[in-house]
Length: 450
Image (tube, rainbow, N blue to C red; front, side, top):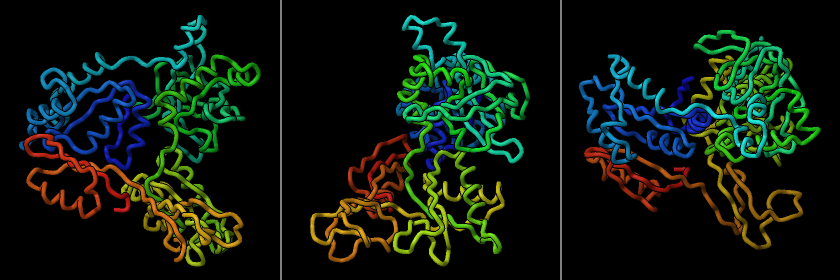
C-alpha cells in the first residue's frame, strides 16, 4: 500500500498521520531545486515516528538538474551515502523506477501487530494474533453509504457480516463506542474499489459498516470484534488493556489527536434560508464531514442565541449571524478548506480574516475583574478579538505565540532575508546554516502574528 502526502507545511498533520500508518517512506527531492524547507520537516517527522527512509532524486532528466550536487547536500545534511543510499529517478523518462521499487521491497520492514508485546508475558501468541485489530487510517462520508473507512489490519481477520466496535481513545474513560456495526462491504482500493469480502494481516482496504456519525470513525481509532469489546467491559481483558496502553504510548495516539491550531477564523453561511434558516445547519454538517478526514481542523460550534455581552468570537452579531470558530494549520489550509466547501458541498462560506490568539495574564490589582456580572477575578484568558481587549487602567501582561521559522534562500539574497527577519521581530536566536554552494538555511524565532 502506498500513501501520497502533501508537502506544504500547513498539512504537516496529514504527513504525521500518514507516517504513523506506514513502515517506510520515500523522501523525494527535486534535483533541480535541491533541499527545500518541507524536506527538513518531513525528515524530522519520519525520524520521530521511526520510519525507514529511502532518499530519491526526481526529474534528473531536466536540463537544469544538478543531481550530484543535491546528492552531496543530502549526504551532508542527513548523513545518507550519496553513492549507495540516494537513488536517481525520473518518472517522465522511466529512469530508476524499478530500482526504487526493489529498494522498497528490500529495506521496508513488514507491519507488526500491536499485540506482539503480549507474547513476552507467556500468552499464546497464535491466539493473540487471531484477535482482530484494524486501525482507521482515513475516512470520508458518502450520502448513500454513510462513513467509508480506510483501515489497516494489524492482527486477525476482518470479514463481511462481522459485528465490530470502535475503540476511540485509550486515554478516555469511555474508550469503547457504545454502538456496534455490521460490516456490509470490504475491499481494496486499486485505486478503484474492488470488493474482496475480507482483509487479513497487513492489508489496507475500505470498510462500509453503516456508520452515519462522522465522529464514530476518527483517524487513529481501532476496530475490534464486538465480542472482544464486550469481554473488555465485563472482565477487564488484559489483551485490550495492553493494546490501549501501547496505543497511548506510541506514534498512533499522537497522530490521531487533533494538534493545536495555529490560527483561528470565523466561518459563516454566505446566505441563509429565508423560511427555516437552515443555512447554519447545512454549514455545520458540511464542516463536520470535512473534519472527518482533515484532523487539522478544530471546530467549535456556538449557539445562535448567544447574548451580545458574552458572545464568542464566532458570533457574527446582527450582520453575519451565528457561525463556527474553526482552527487551521496555516493560511493555505484556510484556502483549501473554503474551496473544499464549495467543490464538495456547493456551499459559499464567509471566512473572516484569521486571528492569532493572545494570552492575557492579569496582574494583581483592584481592576482585574473582566466582564460583567462576574464575581471572581480572572487571572488569565485568551483573546483573539480587539474588541475584547482589557480596558485602560487594567494591569496585565501579554504573551503572544512564537514559532520557529526556517527560511531557505539563495546565498546571494542572504542580506535581504536577514533584514526581513529582523523587521518581523525575528532577530532572536537567528542562525544560518549553509545547505550547499548556492543555498543557506536561516532559522529564527518570531511572533506568529508576523
